[in-house]
Image 1 (cartoon, rainbow, N blue to C red):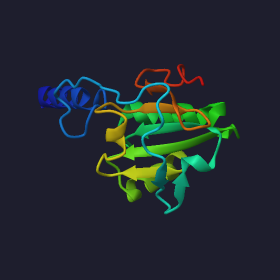
Image 2 (tube, rainbow, N blue to C red; image 1 turned 90 degrees about the vertical axis):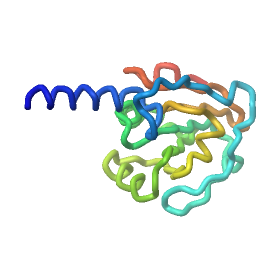
Image 3 (cartoon, rainbow, N blue to C red; image 1 turned 120 degrees about the vertical axis):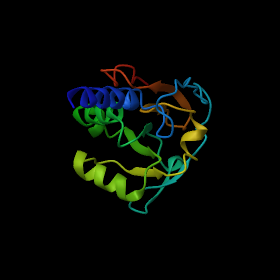
Length: 166
């Protein structure tokens, strides 16, 4: 029984590490990023989990798009780091979370649990995420005030905010 439990735990650790995809976690996926610095953001209009419209062109603040998954430990760590940072209260930065393969209900529960004060967008079919990358969460997409990409970051490491600089 102990051996079976150990095998199960090892398999689970391999399965959830990397947060590449919720479809096939055992296969190594090459992370591709489809946006680069200087390009305009490929999506400017969203509807958050509360039904509010978000038009990125309405604000000239810098923006941080957080592409994440609620089930992913790396995403959870990145969200906690973000919540503990000064970015969360900076009036010159708009933060929008985009939940890859998430529903409104899962995002509302996550927002409640993590006490998030920024809008979350459900991307249940990956149609938004697919404009930015093929795999890997969390990702931080930094935009300037004109909604051009400043930087795209795969934020899986222990200090996910280290590279966040406009």
